Length: 267
Image 1 (cartoon, helix red, strand yellow):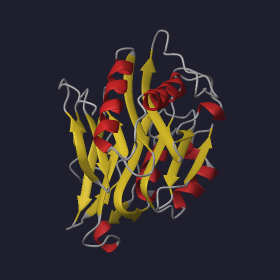
Image 2 (cartoon, one colour):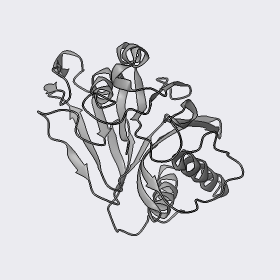
Image 3 (cartoon, one colour):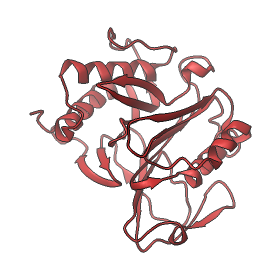
C-alpha cells in the first residue's frame, strides 16, 4: 500500500525535511515506487501548489527539486504510491484535488477499498483508483449535508462518519485538507508528532540527515507531522489507533474521535 505525510502548523512552515525522508521510501528504502505527490497550501490557505509524478520518488529529479523548494504552508499533504487499484499513471497519483465552496480541497489515501464503491454525480473521478472515488463521494456527502467548512465540529462529524462507512469496505487511512485545517483518519496505521519549544534535533530513519529545529523554529511555533510510519529515529511518535480520527488547526488537535466512540452529533 501507500504512505502518507502531512503537516499542520501555526506559522507558515516547510516540510522539506520530512518530505525528503518520505521520498527515500519511494523506491529506495521502501517499495512505494508507483508515483508521488505533494500539495502545499499558500500561507493564507486559499491557493494550493500541487506537484505529482508517476515515477519513483527516490530517483526522481523532479521530486528532489520539490524537496528543496521553500514551500511554507500551514497545511501540506504528501503521498508515495504503491498501486493496488488503477494503473501507474499521473491521473492516479495522490494527492487528489477538487474545488468546492470557493476553497481548494486535497485528499490522499492509504489502503484498499473492495467491492462496489458509492456512486458520485457532482464530482467525477479522473483516474481509476478507489481512492479518488472515495474522495469524490466524501465531497458529495459534505455538499448534500450543506456543510459549512468553517463549522469545525459539524464538518469533523461528517468526515468521521464518511470515513467509517468507507472503512467497512477495506483499509481507509486518509488525509483531507482545505487549507484551514487538516483531517486524518487511521484505519490500520498512522503516527503523529507535535514539535514545540524547546525544539531539539531529529534524525531521519531513511537517510543520514539530521536537523536541529531549535535553529529553525521560533519559541511560539507549533508543528504537527502526520505520517504512516515514524520518519525519525530519535523522537517519540504517537500512534493513532485503528478507527481514530483527529482534526488539526495550527498544529494543535482541536477535535479527536476515539476508536469505537459514537460520532459527534452533527448540529
